[in-house]
Amino acid sequence: MGKGADLNMTDLAERAGVSIATVSRALSGSTGVSATTRVRIRSLADELGYAVSPDAARLARGSTGRVAVVTPNLSHWFYSAMLDGIVTALHGADVDVLLYEVKAERERRRFFEELPARRQVDAVVLIALPISDDERRRLDLMGVTAVMAGGTLGDHPHVRIDDVAMARQATQHLLLAGHRRVAMIGAVGTWSLEYGAPPDRLRGFSEALAAADVAADDELVVRTPWGTTGGADGMARLLSLDDPPTAVVAFSDEVAFGALRTLRRSGIAVPHALSLVGMDDHELADTMDLTTVRQPVTEQGHAAGELVRRFLVGDAPADVHLTLPTHLVARGTTGPPLTATR
Image 1 (tube, rainbow, N blue to C red):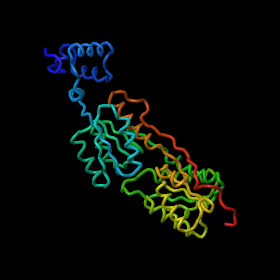
Image 2: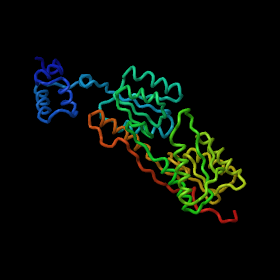
Image 3: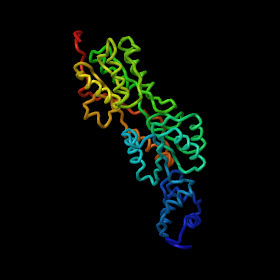
Image 4: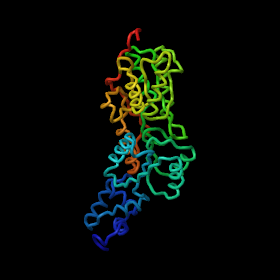
């Protein structure tokens, strides 16, 4: 039998009297091998000067050593922060991360059509990406771990926030300050598939009003395309009402940034004449002195990456459906309403 570089995993398995898979698990630290067998195999490997090859170990356990991360947008702060958390959690896990950006509907469909046939990866992490029933079935057919970061994916593992609770926190902050004519600028998504956050945040807004015994007013809910332009247009529509609101909840901080632009150009002082609260805690929210509800974006990505890492080493956690908390960050865009002289 050879030694060192001339020795392969098959030789080591024959010498130890075990299968190649057992040798692979023992040397890689995976579960499914007794402590006695693990020590015996590692001692034999040291004695013979055998260095485990990562590629050989992967082949032995039927692994590719690759994880796919699918994101709608690499340039947006939310997705890049989520990606940072995922990659950090997988650091040192002996896997390569394959990144797929699917900005358009056709790119998303092509990804799900092609990936199952190629069976290129051991796991797929989707970052807040709505998918169809057919695409979910394709994921199931792949037979690999699929995790949603920033949303849900049927019974698959996921890490998310509670968007209903988040909007409730934002609205309650304004109600506790004394506001009763509270509006919301909702968002219309860019995907043809349903995206959970817009209806969930509207629901949280409505539930907070109901809990405070404040009557809902349909004219105080406007829906605009997501982003700063939509926020600016939404605020302009609210200001044009005969009886405009004293406070506004924005679907996101980007929407709130646009709303602030309209308020500034209209000469309306914030928060003295109108209060505004956003959601997400965008990286520029502090610079804009925007009151918001923070969601832990990087932390969601890290938790999703940790789920994947544990699945890959055979250490599946008991809880694979995680909801991380959100909390209000009070800054300078909210305060009590003006008196009735307004």
